[in-house]
Image 1 (cartoon, rainbow, N blue to C red):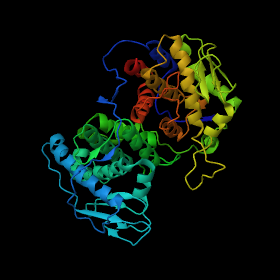
Image 2 (spheres, helix red, strand yellow):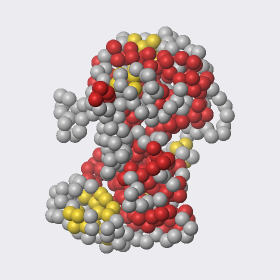
Image 3 (tube, one colour):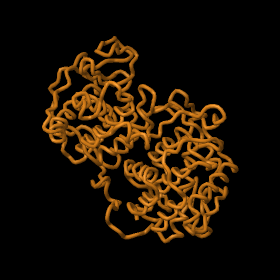
Length: 481
Protein backbone atom coordinates (compact mmCIF):
# COMPACT_ATOMS: atom_id res chain seq x y z
CA UNK A 1 0.00 0.00 0.00
CA UNK A 2 1.04 3.60 -0.29
CA UNK A 3 0.23 7.08 0.92
CA UNK A 4 -0.25 9.94 -1.55
CA UNK A 5 -1.06 9.95 -5.26
CA UNK A 6 -4.22 9.12 -7.15
CA UNK A 7 -5.45 5.77 -8.46
CA UNK A 8 -8.40 4.67 -10.50
CA UNK A 9 -10.81 2.90 -8.13
CA UNK A 10 -11.25 -0.85 -8.49
CA UNK A 11 -14.40 -0.98 -6.41
CA UNK A 12 -16.34 1.87 -4.88
CA UNK A 13 -17.75 1.16 -1.43
CA UNK A 14 -18.49 4.15 0.76
CA UNK A 15 -17.67 4.18 4.45
CA UNK A 16 -21.35 4.63 5.23
CA UNK A 17 -22.27 1.48 3.32
CA UNK A 18 -19.47 -0.36 5.07
CA UNK A 19 -20.72 0.60 8.47
CA UNK A 20 -24.36 -0.10 7.56
CA UNK A 21 -23.43 -3.61 6.56
CA UNK A 22 -21.74 -4.15 9.88
CA UNK A 23 -24.76 -3.04 11.78
CA UNK A 24 -26.62 -5.97 10.25
CA UNK A 25 -24.07 -8.56 11.41
CA UNK A 26 -25.61 -11.44 13.28
CA UNK A 27 -28.83 -11.42 11.30
CA UNK A 28 -30.69 -14.72 11.11
CA UNK A 29 -31.93 -14.37 7.52
CA UNK A 30 -31.15 -17.72 5.86
CA UNK A 31 -31.70 -16.61 2.26
CA UNK A 32 -28.36 -16.45 0.48
CA UNK A 33 -26.35 -17.32 3.58
CA UNK A 34 -23.34 -19.60 3.46
CA UNK A 35 -23.19 -22.60 5.76
CA UNK A 36 -19.85 -22.84 7.59
CA UNK A 37 -19.85 -26.54 6.71
CA UNK A 38 -19.93 -26.02 2.95
CA UNK A 39 -17.78 -24.72 0.11
CA UNK A 40 -20.01 -23.21 -2.58
CA UNK A 41 -22.78 -25.60 -1.53
CA UNK A 42 -20.55 -28.69 -1.26
CA UNK A 43 -19.57 -30.31 2.06
CA UNK A 44 -16.16 -29.50 3.52
CA UNK A 45 -14.14 -32.67 2.94
CA UNK A 46 -10.69 -33.83 4.04
CA UNK A 47 -8.83 -36.54 2.15
CA UNK A 48 -5.82 -37.03 -0.09
CA UNK A 49 -6.50 -35.36 -3.42
CA UNK A 50 -5.17 -36.74 -6.67
CA UNK A 51 -5.51 -39.79 -8.90
CA UNK A 52 -8.08 -42.33 -7.86
CA UNK A 53 -6.97 -45.83 -7.05
CA UNK A 54 -7.75 -47.87 -10.15
CA UNK A 55 -8.19 -44.81 -12.39
CA UNK A 56 -8.65 -45.80 -16.05
CA UNK A 57 -5.51 -45.95 -18.21
CA UNK A 58 -5.59 -43.09 -20.76
CA UNK A 59 -5.63 -44.13 -24.41
CA UNK A 60 -3.87 -41.17 -25.97
CA UNK A 61 -1.21 -40.54 -28.57
CA UNK A 62 1.33 -38.12 -27.14
CA UNK A 63 4.40 -36.95 -29.02
CA UNK A 64 7.68 -37.46 -27.11
CA UNK A 65 5.90 -38.93 -24.08
CA UNK A 66 7.90 -40.47 -21.22
CA UNK A 67 7.08 -42.74 -18.30
CA UNK A 68 7.64 -39.93 -15.79
CA UNK A 69 5.10 -39.17 -13.08
CA UNK A 70 4.48 -35.78 -14.69
CA UNK A 71 3.56 -37.31 -18.05
CA UNK A 72 1.35 -39.96 -16.50
CA UNK A 73 -0.52 -37.30 -14.56
CA UNK A 74 -0.77 -35.04 -17.62
CA UNK A 75 -2.25 -37.84 -19.74
CA UNK A 76 -4.74 -38.73 -17.01
CA UNK A 77 -5.79 -35.07 -16.85
CA UNK A 78 -6.25 -34.78 -20.62
CA UNK A 79 -8.32 -37.94 -20.78
CA UNK A 80 -10.43 -36.79 -17.85
CA UNK A 81 -10.97 -33.17 -18.91
CA UNK A 82 -11.90 -34.42 -22.39
CA UNK A 83 -14.57 -36.61 -20.80
CA UNK A 84 -15.82 -33.55 -18.90
CA UNK A 85 -16.15 -31.52 -22.09
CA UNK A 86 -17.73 -34.45 -23.93
CA UNK A 87 -20.53 -34.07 -21.40
CA UNK A 88 -20.65 -30.34 -20.76
CA UNK A 89 -20.10 -28.81 -24.19
CA UNK A 90 -23.31 -30.19 -25.76
CA UNK A 91 -25.18 -29.66 -22.51
CA UNK A 92 -24.33 -25.94 -22.41
CA UNK A 93 -23.97 -24.99 -26.06
CA UNK A 94 -26.90 -26.32 -28.05
CA UNK A 95 -25.71 -29.88 -28.55
CA UNK A 96 -22.28 -28.96 -29.94
CA UNK A 97 -19.95 -31.95 -29.69
CA UNK A 98 -16.44 -31.71 -28.28
CA UNK A 99 -13.85 -32.58 -30.89
CA UNK A 100 -10.64 -34.03 -29.37
CA UNK A 101 -7.50 -31.91 -29.48
CA UNK A 102 -5.53 -32.94 -32.57
CA UNK A 103 -2.02 -33.07 -31.13
CA UNK A 104 -0.48 -33.55 -27.67
CA UNK A 105 3.21 -32.92 -27.00
CA UNK A 106 5.35 -33.55 -23.94
CA UNK A 107 8.73 -31.86 -23.81
CA UNK A 108 11.60 -30.91 -21.53
CA UNK A 109 12.32 -27.19 -21.48
CA UNK A 110 15.88 -28.03 -20.43
CA UNK A 111 16.21 -30.87 -22.95
CA UNK A 112 15.90 -31.60 -26.69
CA UNK A 113 13.73 -29.17 -28.64
CA UNK A 114 10.25 -30.10 -29.90
CA UNK A 115 8.17 -28.10 -32.35
CA UNK A 116 4.50 -27.14 -32.43
CA UNK A 117 2.45 -24.89 -34.64
CA UNK A 118 3.36 -22.07 -32.25
CA UNK A 119 7.14 -22.57 -32.37
CA UNK A 120 9.95 -24.30 -30.51
CA UNK A 121 9.78 -25.57 -26.95
CA UNK A 122 13.42 -24.98 -25.98
CA UNK A 123 13.57 -23.09 -22.64
CA UNK A 124 9.75 -22.75 -22.59
CA UNK A 125 8.90 -23.48 -18.93
CA UNK A 126 5.24 -23.52 -19.74
CA UNK A 127 2.10 -25.37 -20.73
CA UNK A 128 0.13 -24.00 -23.64
CA UNK A 129 -2.63 -24.46 -26.17
CA UNK A 130 -1.75 -23.65 -29.79
CA UNK A 131 -4.63 -22.81 -32.11
CA UNK A 132 -2.43 -23.00 -35.20
CA UNK A 133 -2.33 -26.80 -35.04
CA UNK A 134 -4.97 -27.40 -32.34
CA UNK A 135 -2.41 -28.78 -29.89
CA UNK A 136 -1.65 -28.82 -26.18
CA UNK A 137 1.96 -29.06 -24.99
CA UNK A 138 3.53 -29.15 -21.53
CA UNK A 139 6.96 -28.99 -19.96
CA UNK A 140 7.67 -32.20 -18.05
CA UNK A 141 11.24 -31.11 -17.39
CA UNK A 142 10.69 -28.14 -15.03
CA UNK A 143 7.12 -26.86 -14.82
CA UNK A 144 5.11 -29.98 -13.99
CA UNK A 145 7.63 -31.44 -11.53
CA UNK A 146 7.81 -28.06 -9.78
CA UNK A 147 4.02 -27.89 -9.45
CA UNK A 148 3.92 -31.46 -8.16
CA UNK A 149 6.59 -30.82 -5.56
CA UNK A 150 5.18 -27.54 -4.26
CA UNK A 151 1.43 -28.09 -4.43
CA UNK A 152 0.64 -31.70 -5.26
CA UNK A 153 -1.00 -33.36 -8.28
CA UNK A 154 -4.07 -31.14 -8.51
CA UNK A 155 -1.84 -28.18 -9.39
CA UNK A 156 -0.91 -29.99 -12.60
CA UNK A 157 -4.58 -30.76 -13.23
CA UNK A 158 -5.63 -27.10 -12.93
CA UNK A 159 -2.87 -25.89 -15.26
CA UNK A 160 -3.81 -28.36 -17.99
CA UNK A 161 -7.51 -27.81 -17.30
CA UNK A 162 -6.87 -24.13 -18.03
CA UNK A 163 -5.16 -24.96 -21.34
CA UNK A 164 -8.12 -27.10 -22.36
CA UNK A 165 -10.25 -24.06 -21.62
CA UNK A 166 -8.45 -22.39 -24.52
CA UNK A 167 -9.18 -25.41 -26.71
CA UNK A 168 -12.86 -24.99 -25.83
CA UNK A 169 -12.70 -21.31 -26.85
CA UNK A 170 -11.23 -22.35 -30.18
CA UNK A 171 -14.20 -24.67 -30.72
CA UNK A 172 -16.88 -22.26 -29.50
CA UNK A 173 -15.55 -19.18 -31.34
CA UNK A 174 -18.44 -16.71 -31.60
CA UNK A 175 -20.40 -18.60 -28.91
CA UNK A 176 -17.69 -17.44 -26.51
CA UNK A 177 -17.31 -14.06 -28.22
CA UNK A 178 -13.74 -14.87 -29.18
CA UNK A 179 -12.21 -13.18 -32.23
CA UNK A 180 -8.68 -12.32 -33.39
CA UNK A 181 -8.96 -8.98 -31.60
CA UNK A 182 -10.20 -10.28 -28.25
CA UNK A 183 -7.81 -9.04 -25.52
CA UNK A 184 -5.64 -11.73 -23.92
CA UNK A 185 -7.01 -11.04 -20.43
CA UNK A 186 -10.54 -11.98 -21.55
CA UNK A 187 -9.34 -15.27 -23.04
CA UNK A 188 -7.41 -16.04 -19.86
CA UNK A 189 -10.33 -15.20 -17.60
CA UNK A 190 -12.56 -17.52 -19.61
CA UNK A 191 -9.97 -20.31 -19.49
CA UNK A 192 -9.56 -19.99 -15.70
CA UNK A 193 -13.34 -20.02 -15.38
CA UNK A 194 -13.64 -23.14 -17.56
CA UNK A 195 -11.04 -24.82 -15.32
CA UNK A 196 -13.23 -23.94 -12.34
CA UNK A 197 -16.24 -25.70 -13.88
CA UNK A 198 -14.09 -28.79 -14.42
CA UNK A 199 -12.97 -28.79 -10.79
CA UNK A 200 -16.58 -28.50 -9.64
CA UNK A 201 -17.28 -31.69 -11.59
CA UNK A 202 -14.35 -33.40 -9.87
CA UNK A 203 -15.44 -32.12 -6.44
CA UNK A 204 -18.93 -33.51 -7.10
CA UNK A 205 -17.29 -36.96 -7.46
CA UNK A 206 -18.13 -37.29 -11.15
CA UNK A 207 -14.57 -37.81 -12.39
CA UNK A 208 -13.38 -41.37 -12.97
CA UNK A 209 -9.75 -40.30 -12.63
CA UNK A 210 -9.45 -37.72 -9.83
CA UNK A 211 -10.68 -36.79 -6.37
CA UNK A 212 -10.29 -33.36 -4.83
CA UNK A 213 -11.19 -32.39 -1.28
CA UNK A 214 -12.90 -29.06 -0.78
CA UNK A 215 -10.47 -28.20 2.02
CA UNK A 216 -6.81 -29.09 1.46
CA UNK A 217 -7.28 -30.05 -2.21
CA UNK A 218 -8.85 -26.80 -3.34
CA UNK A 219 -6.42 -24.89 -1.11
CA UNK A 220 -3.56 -26.40 -3.12
CA UNK A 221 -5.25 -25.30 -6.33
CA UNK A 222 -5.63 -21.73 -5.02
CA UNK A 223 -1.96 -21.72 -4.01
CA UNK A 224 -0.92 -22.91 -7.47
CA UNK A 225 -2.92 -20.13 -9.11
CA UNK A 226 -1.23 -17.66 -6.76
CA UNK A 227 2.16 -18.92 -7.96
CA UNK A 228 1.35 -18.59 -11.66
CA UNK A 229 -0.09 -15.07 -11.37
CA UNK A 230 1.32 -12.10 -13.26
CA UNK A 231 3.80 -10.13 -11.18
CA UNK A 232 2.75 -6.84 -9.59
CA UNK A 233 2.98 -3.84 -11.88
CA UNK A 234 1.76 -5.53 -15.04
CA UNK A 235 -1.29 -4.22 -16.86
CA UNK A 236 -4.35 -6.21 -17.89
CA UNK A 237 -4.26 -4.35 -21.22
CA UNK A 238 -0.88 -5.83 -22.16
CA UNK A 239 -0.69 -8.59 -24.74
CA UNK A 240 -0.17 -11.86 -22.89
CA UNK A 241 -1.60 -10.66 -19.57
CA UNK A 242 -3.02 -13.57 -17.55
CA UNK A 243 -4.18 -11.62 -14.51
CA UNK A 244 -3.23 -11.07 -10.90
CA UNK A 245 -3.82 -13.84 -8.37
CA UNK A 246 -6.99 -12.00 -7.30
CA UNK A 247 -8.24 -11.91 -10.89
CA UNK A 248 -7.33 -15.52 -11.64
CA UNK A 249 -8.85 -16.98 -8.48
CA UNK A 250 -11.97 -14.87 -9.08
CA UNK A 251 -12.47 -16.42 -12.52
CA UNK A 252 -11.76 -19.94 -11.25
CA UNK A 253 -14.26 -19.52 -8.41
CA UNK A 254 -16.84 -18.07 -10.80
CA UNK A 255 -16.59 -21.26 -12.85
CA UNK A 256 -16.73 -23.45 -9.75
CA UNK A 257 -19.94 -21.73 -8.68
CA UNK A 258 -21.61 -21.41 -12.08
CA UNK A 259 -21.58 -23.08 -15.53
CA UNK A 260 -19.47 -23.19 -18.71
CA UNK A 261 -22.08 -20.99 -20.37
CA UNK A 262 -21.46 -18.32 -17.72
CA UNK A 263 -17.72 -18.58 -18.40
CA UNK A 264 -18.30 -18.05 -22.12
CA UNK A 265 -20.18 -14.90 -21.16
CA UNK A 266 -17.03 -13.23 -19.81
CA UNK A 267 -16.32 -10.21 -22.02
CA UNK A 268 -14.08 -7.16 -21.97
CA UNK A 269 -17.04 -5.03 -20.90
CA UNK A 270 -17.94 -7.09 -17.84
CA UNK A 271 -14.32 -7.52 -16.75
CA UNK A 272 -13.29 -3.87 -16.88
CA UNK A 273 -14.99 -3.00 -13.61
CA UNK A 274 -13.44 -5.84 -11.62
CA UNK A 275 -9.97 -6.57 -13.06
CA UNK A 276 -7.40 -5.51 -10.47
CA UNK A 277 -4.21 -5.96 -12.52
CA UNK A 278 -2.90 -2.41 -12.92
CA UNK A 279 0.46 -0.93 -13.83
CA UNK A 280 2.43 0.96 -11.22
CA UNK A 281 1.79 4.70 -11.28
CA UNK A 282 4.27 6.95 -13.05
CA UNK A 283 5.57 10.46 -12.43
CA UNK A 284 4.50 12.11 -9.20
CA UNK A 285 2.68 8.95 -8.09
CA UNK A 286 5.70 6.67 -8.45
CA UNK A 287 5.67 6.03 -4.67
CA UNK A 288 2.75 3.75 -5.45
CA UNK A 289 5.35 1.11 -6.30
CA UNK A 290 6.68 -1.23 -3.63
CA UNK A 291 5.95 -2.01 0.00
CA UNK A 292 5.58 0.44 2.86
CA UNK A 293 7.97 0.20 5.78
CA UNK A 294 6.17 -1.38 8.72
CA UNK A 295 6.68 0.96 11.65
CA UNK A 296 4.59 2.77 14.24
CA UNK A 297 3.86 5.63 11.83
CA UNK A 298 2.33 3.40 9.14
CA UNK A 299 0.39 1.46 11.77
CA UNK A 300 -0.99 4.82 12.88
CA UNK A 301 -2.05 5.54 9.30
CA UNK A 302 -3.68 2.10 9.14
CA UNK A 303 -5.58 2.90 12.36
CA UNK A 304 -6.90 6.14 10.86
CA UNK A 305 -8.00 4.27 7.73
CA UNK A 306 -9.85 1.63 9.73
CA UNK A 307 -11.44 4.21 12.05
CA UNK A 308 -12.74 6.16 9.07
CA UNK A 309 -14.09 3.09 7.30
CA UNK A 310 -15.99 1.84 10.34
CA UNK A 311 -16.98 5.18 11.89
CA UNK A 312 -20.70 4.90 11.16
CA UNK A 313 -20.97 1.55 12.95
CA UNK A 314 -21.35 3.52 16.18
CA UNK A 315 -18.81 1.31 17.93
CA UNK A 316 -15.91 2.34 20.13
CA UNK A 317 -12.97 1.50 17.85
CA UNK A 318 -10.18 -0.66 19.25
CA UNK A 319 -6.83 0.94 19.91
CA UNK A 320 -3.77 -0.65 18.26
CA UNK A 321 -0.88 -1.03 20.69
CA UNK A 322 2.60 -2.40 20.04
CA UNK A 323 2.95 -4.38 23.26
CA UNK A 324 3.90 -7.88 22.12
CA UNK A 325 0.93 -9.26 20.18
CA UNK A 326 -0.72 -11.15 23.05
CA UNK A 327 -3.55 -10.58 25.52
CA UNK A 328 -2.84 -11.05 29.25
CA UNK A 329 -6.48 -11.88 30.01
CA UNK A 330 -7.96 -13.70 27.02
CA UNK A 331 -7.18 -15.53 23.79
CA UNK A 332 -3.89 -14.59 22.14
CA UNK A 333 -3.17 -14.94 18.42
CA UNK A 334 0.28 -13.39 17.89
CA UNK A 335 1.59 -11.51 16.01
CA UNK A 336 -1.75 -9.67 16.41
CA UNK A 337 -4.50 -10.29 18.96
CA UNK A 338 -7.84 -8.70 19.75
CA UNK A 339 -8.01 -8.26 23.53
CA UNK A 340 -11.65 -8.09 24.55
CA UNK A 341 -11.02 -6.97 28.14
CA UNK A 342 -9.32 -3.74 27.01
CA UNK A 343 -10.79 -3.38 23.48
CA UNK A 344 -7.30 -3.23 22.01
CA UNK A 345 -5.41 -4.89 19.19
CA UNK A 346 -2.06 -5.95 20.55
CA UNK A 347 0.68 -6.30 17.90
CA UNK A 348 4.19 -7.71 17.84
CA UNK A 349 5.85 -5.06 15.67
CA UNK A 350 9.12 -6.94 14.94
CA UNK A 351 7.17 -10.04 13.86
CA UNK A 352 4.93 -7.94 11.62
CA UNK A 353 7.99 -6.25 10.12
CA UNK A 354 9.32 -9.68 9.15
CA UNK A 355 5.95 -10.61 7.63
CA UNK A 356 5.83 -7.30 5.76
CA UNK A 357 9.09 -7.81 3.86
CA UNK A 358 8.61 -8.15 0.09
CA UNK A 359 7.97 -11.63 -1.27
CA UNK A 360 11.11 -13.22 -2.69
CA UNK A 361 11.45 -15.82 -5.40
CA UNK A 362 12.96 -19.19 -4.53
CA UNK A 363 16.20 -18.02 -6.12
CA UNK A 364 16.27 -14.83 -4.04
CA UNK A 365 15.53 -16.46 -0.68
CA UNK A 366 18.39 -17.14 1.69
CA UNK A 367 18.59 -18.65 5.15
CA UNK A 368 19.26 -15.18 6.54
CA UNK A 369 16.48 -13.52 4.52
CA UNK A 370 13.57 -15.77 3.55
CA UNK A 371 11.46 -12.75 2.60
CA UNK A 372 7.93 -12.04 3.76
CA UNK A 373 4.42 -11.67 2.36
CA UNK A 374 4.41 -7.91 1.73
CA UNK A 375 2.95 -4.89 3.53
CA UNK A 376 -0.68 -5.62 2.74
CA UNK A 377 -0.39 -9.02 4.41
CA UNK A 378 0.47 -7.12 7.60
CA UNK A 379 -2.37 -4.62 7.15
CA UNK A 380 -4.86 -7.43 6.47
CA UNK A 381 -3.77 -9.35 9.58
CA UNK A 382 -4.06 -6.29 11.82
CA UNK A 383 -7.34 -5.24 10.16
CA UNK A 384 -8.77 -8.70 10.83
CA UNK A 385 -8.17 -8.29 14.57
CA UNK A 386 -9.51 -4.72 14.48
CA UNK A 387 -12.76 -5.92 12.90
CA UNK A 388 -13.14 -8.41 15.76
CA UNK A 389 -13.66 -5.42 18.04
CA UNK A 390 -16.16 -3.79 15.68
CA UNK A 391 -18.09 -7.05 15.27
CA UNK A 392 -18.23 -7.60 19.03
CA UNK A 393 -19.48 -4.06 19.59
CA UNK A 394 -22.44 -4.52 17.22
CA UNK A 395 -23.39 -7.87 18.79
CA UNK A 396 -21.97 -10.28 16.24
CA UNK A 397 -20.31 -13.55 17.19
CA UNK A 398 -16.52 -13.55 17.07
CA UNK A 399 -15.73 -17.10 18.16
CA UNK A 400 -17.05 -19.45 15.45
CA UNK A 401 -16.47 -20.42 11.81
CA UNK A 402 -18.85 -17.77 10.50
CA UNK A 403 -16.84 -15.18 12.41
CA UNK A 404 -13.72 -16.21 10.50
CA UNK A 405 -15.43 -15.95 7.13
CA UNK A 406 -17.12 -12.68 8.05
CA UNK A 407 -13.79 -11.27 9.21
CA UNK A 408 -12.09 -12.03 5.89
CA UNK A 409 -15.08 -10.54 4.08
CA UNK A 410 -14.86 -7.33 6.12
CA UNK A 411 -11.13 -7.07 5.46
CA UNK A 412 -11.97 -7.26 1.74
CA UNK A 413 -14.66 -4.60 2.11
CA UNK A 414 -12.23 -2.31 3.95
CA UNK A 415 -9.63 -2.87 1.20
CA UNK A 416 -12.17 -1.62 -1.33
CA UNK A 417 -12.75 1.49 0.78
CA UNK A 418 -9.04 2.29 0.59
CA UNK A 419 -9.46 2.71 -3.17
CA UNK A 420 -11.66 5.76 -2.73
CA UNK A 421 -10.32 9.11 -3.80
CA UNK A 422 -8.82 11.05 -0.91
CA UNK A 423 -7.85 8.05 1.20
CA UNK A 424 -4.43 8.41 2.78
CA UNK A 425 -3.76 4.68 2.72
CA UNK A 426 -4.56 3.12 -0.64
CA UNK A 427 -4.07 -0.12 -2.53
CA UNK A 428 -1.02 -0.52 -4.73
CA UNK A 429 -0.72 -3.12 -7.53
CA UNK A 430 -0.06 -6.50 -5.98
CA UNK A 431 -1.58 -5.72 -2.57
CA UNK A 432 -4.61 -7.97 -3.00
CA UNK A 433 -2.32 -10.78 -4.13
CA UNK A 434 -0.33 -10.34 -0.92
CA UNK A 435 -3.57 -10.80 1.01
CA UNK A 436 -4.40 -13.97 -0.93
CA UNK A 437 -0.91 -15.31 -0.37
CA UNK A 438 -1.32 -14.68 3.35
CA UNK A 439 -4.85 -16.15 3.44
CA UNK A 440 -3.51 -19.43 2.06
CA UNK A 441 -0.88 -19.74 4.78
CA UNK A 442 -1.66 -22.16 7.64
CA UNK A 443 -0.85 -19.40 10.16
CA UNK A 444 -2.99 -16.63 8.62
CA UNK A 445 -5.33 -14.65 10.88
CA UNK A 446 -7.31 -12.96 8.10
CA UNK A 447 -10.04 -15.64 8.13
CA UNK A 448 -9.74 -16.60 11.79
CA UNK A 449 -12.04 -16.01 14.75
CA UNK A 450 -10.96 -14.27 17.96
CA UNK A 451 -9.36 -17.50 19.20
CA UNK A 452 -7.27 -17.88 16.05
CA UNK A 453 -9.39 -20.76 14.75
CA UNK A 454 -8.98 -20.64 10.97
CA UNK A 455 -11.50 -21.64 8.32
CA UNK A 456 -10.40 -25.04 6.96
CA UNK A 457 -10.95 -24.33 3.28
CA UNK A 458 -8.53 -21.98 1.53
CA UNK A 459 -11.10 -21.71 -1.27
CA UNK A 460 -13.69 -20.43 1.22
CA UNK A 461 -11.18 -18.01 2.78
CA UNK A 462 -10.29 -16.44 -0.57
CA UNK A 463 -13.93 -16.38 -1.66
CA UNK A 464 -15.06 -14.55 1.49
CA UNK A 465 -12.44 -11.81 1.13
CA UNK A 466 -13.22 -11.50 -2.56
CA UNK A 467 -16.96 -11.19 -1.89
CA UNK A 468 -16.32 -8.37 0.57
CA UNK A 469 -14.08 -6.53 -1.88
CA UNK A 470 -16.40 -6.91 -4.87
CA UNK A 471 -19.79 -6.61 -3.17
CA UNK A 472 -19.19 -4.54 -0.03
CA UNK A 473 -19.82 -5.29 3.62
CA UNK A 474 -23.59 -5.91 3.37
CA UNK A 475 -22.72 -9.24 1.77
CA UNK A 476 -20.55 -10.06 4.78
CA UNK A 477 -23.50 -10.05 7.14
CA UNK A 478 -25.88 -11.59 4.61
CA UNK A 479 -23.57 -14.49 3.76
CA UNK A 480 -21.82 -15.04 7.08
CA UNK A 481 -24.30 -13.69 9.60
